[in-house]
Image (tube, rainbow, N blue to C red):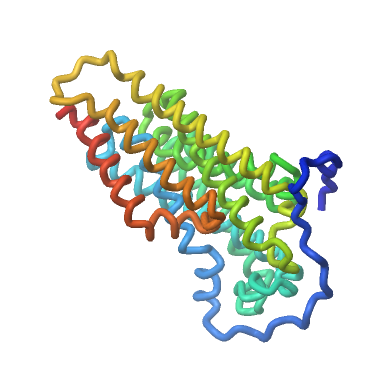
Length: 326
C-alpha cells in the first residue's frame, strides 16, 4: 500500500481527524451458498450500472439521441462500459479478498465469502478487460476503444495504489464519471463543449466528495467499517471539497446554458437558460443530504427523494424543450 504523508498537524479547534480504531480480524465468514454465475453477477455490482447511463449525456445535450443509429451506438457503449466496470470490480475483489474477509460488511462479497474462487474472478475480469476495448475498436471507433482502455488502466491503478493517495483518489473516481459522460459523444462524433466537461466533471466531484463526507460522518469510530483514506481526511476538508465542486458545477452549467444564448431560436421561452433554475435547485436539494451526512449512497438519494425527482423531471422537460426548439 502506498504510504501517504499525513495532513498538517495544526488543525482548527474542534476539527478532529477521523481515525478508526484497529481491532484484530475475526474468523473468516462461512462459505456462501449460490451458483458461481450468480456470484459473478453480484460481484459486477448491478446496482452500480445506473452510473453508466451517463453515456447518454453528450448525445442528449446535443439533441442527437433519438435517431436509430444514435440509440444503437449509445446502447452499445453502455454495454461496453458496463463490461469494463465489471472487469475492474472482479479484479479488485479478487485482489482484496483476504482483507475483505476480515471486514464486517465486505466479507459478504461473493469472492471474499468463497462463492466465487479468486482465480475465476481474476480470469473473468481479465477476459472482460480485453474483450470490451477490442469490441469497441471493431464496432464503434478507435477513440472509444482508447477511452475504455484508459478507463480500465486508470481504475486498476486506483485499485492497486491510487486509492491510497490523498486527493488523487477523489480525482480518479471523478474522472471515471467524466469518461462515462464523454464516451457517448465520442461514439457519435459529437464535439464536446468545454462547459459541458466542466459541469460534468465538477458535478461528479460534488457527488463523490459528498459521498466520502457522509461515509466519514457515519463510520467514525467503527472499526474496519470505513475507507482507509477517511482516516486521513478531515470532515472539514471534505465539506470544503463538495461545496467548492458544487459552486464550480453551477457556474459551469450557467456558462454552458448561456453559451447557446446567441443561437437563433423560435421557441416561446428561452428554455435552455430557464433550465439553470432547475439545475441550481437540484444541486441545493442534493446538498441538503450532503450536509446531513446522508449522501453515502448517491443512487438512493436520486431515486428515493421525491422533491429531487420532481426537480429532475422539470429540468429534463425544460432542456428537452430547448433541444427541440419549442
